[in-house]
Length: 499
Image (cartoon, rainbow, N blue to C red; front, side, top):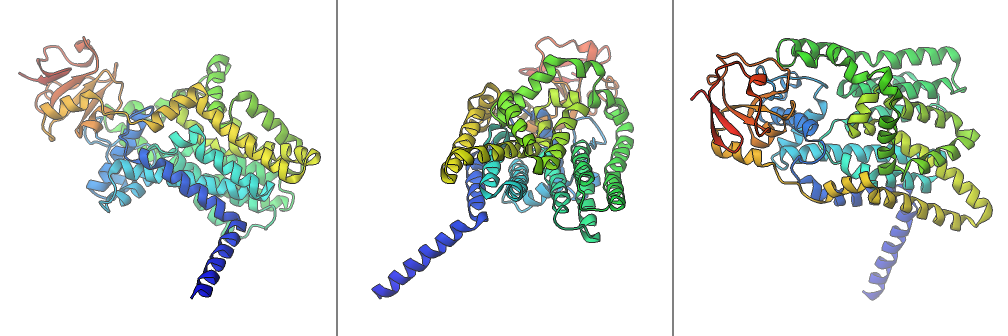
């Protein structure tokens, strides 16, 4: 009996040693640990940096969970009837709704889980690419930065579609990279096109930059004939068409509601692409870049140095150039979006980390020529650990970690509205731009009015909309409503209409 027990223990130890030699074992440990770290955040309300965007997305999940799974009927009931404000095709919301319909997870939790899984997929693809280019150790280190940097921890846990879209587009990019060693076949090209088309439906402006990077990678791939490269490039470009068609459909829906007409793509072009002046505003650009690099790469100087080391390696220069094109094209094309919304940097996050990894690889080779291999590997692990830790102590990084670690309570507005209104009452919210957060946290539907928005018709006030909640202490009522409106305060900042 004792001999059998010793044999069993020996077999178990041997198995564990064998697992330790498998390159995916440690990656699995990283993913499991990362998911465990995020468990506390999964139950948090959608309060923090991105309430405007996360509650907009969560409304879509809520609609598909409680009503129909038809993505064309998903609602965002914050800008009046017919309660539809389509931006992206609600595939992310659909997947989260499937989780929420099991009754195991709440709506917010389901959204956070999909975001977390999306980041894990990105981490896996980063590991795959970095391991192929630089070895398993660098692959694990790159995945660690994706999973545990302050940017990855916060943004990868929020109810945002960005990580989901990037995971699909990044997957397509990785397959294009595989064509340097394996010639593309029809199935492979069609798979890449399907991934791009799906990603473009979820978020077109995140997908475009990865398609551009894929085309650069394809163009520099001398193992494929020039004619084949042209044909494949055309296919990759045409794969963006579903995203364009969905945008056209969304514009038609938004044009039917006078409160959403200003959100049509033709009206938002200036906001999306910015102006020449925006591109010359060095202070704004440098601030956005600095915040991103501090929360991902330890700081701008550190990031620039590592990119410089990445460019030194001639054998991997094609890969480095394609990643640089992705990293630069995102904020260059959509400069205002990247300057205002920090979560937009998720689109280029994997490219930035892979560039860091390529730089670390060159540093490792330099260290390897001076020290023993084991010592150089320990040095790389130490440097990566310092890099991740530095993202926590930077100003923007510490802000991210503060939100990630500590629960933010629901705003007092939600309590006031819930205590003084019925669930069926429609609420007008003023003084918070067009953010749907107040309505979402209150479990209500209604209309968010921003300055300059069309004023509600007198027949709508009292008959359709029963209450007004104002975020302003002394709101300029004449800017939002027609003359003669009667309001009675029934709670702090909450007014009943028509009495």
